[in-house]
Length: 379
Image 1 (cartoon, one colour):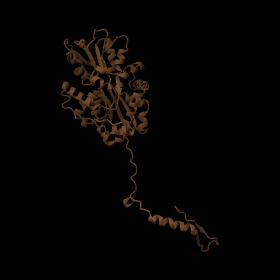
Image 2 (image 1 turned 90 degrees about the vertical axis):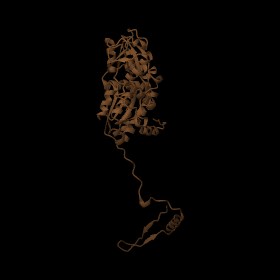
Image 3 (image 1 turned 30 degrees about the vertical axis):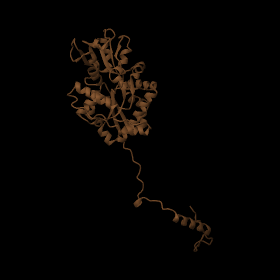
Image 4 (image 1 turned 135 degrees about the vertical axis):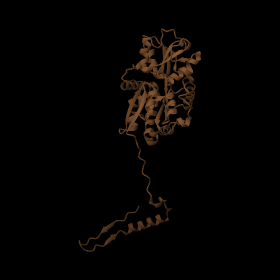
């Protein structure tokens, strides 16, 4: 770019002062203009339009998030304890984390419009979707995590020994209930019953936090639940309890998602940026739990204590943690397969099996994975 210097004359003030132009610079400028005229024209936006301004993200000021007190939902506790949520969502988004004893209660709150996001059992999510499809599965949480334990003094050594006994499940129609009825008991030719029956297995409900006390008082003989509650029972020396069916023997060699991550369709449609940011924290928590399980276990211990007010020894968390494999892939095929099991047990709750693309929406998860340079997952 050429510069033309203009110098004022030296005549007195108030008189007409001529301009002296440095002719050599003017000549240089003329050559530059001539060269510019011979250069190819640079395309300009038609109509003089300026580039579009950057898109401003729209975030929901408050998120109501539900979870079970479970190792299978470790990501929410890790994300909260490691401040991954605040890092991704910022200080202007408040996360209201609410704990529930079982997935059916979570889905009842979801149907009532009380929640935005939930870590919940895959089975309650499926049965609720048939009633009111106001959410989608946006990610996975785990593989495995369910264990059937029995008292050590009741001579229960095999599944067949449960005949005439009482087994507790977290809730009727939840994942553990379906696995007990559809996968475990049939191996020994047994059926479930709501009432005492010497030829069948009586199935009752109990909040996982209460299962240890009920085993001690003798009102139940065995219990099936999600970790860390089976480990809590196993590490209590007064019962001498034993693993009857371990996590990798429950179903599909342990390759089953007992929980999923869901979001309301309204949140996905109105605040996709909020969901994407939440999923970034979820993915980061999954990676942390996978690469640094000791730190994840301590965060899980601290956060369950803070949320539920029940102290689970760190040894209990450490025992249960390896039985649940953290993942952000919802393993859609296994979830839909479990829907078929539900339909065989509870046809009134599962009138039809939802389609994979109807039940899952992994668009925002894959966007979050792409941002982190990770491969996408497919429903």
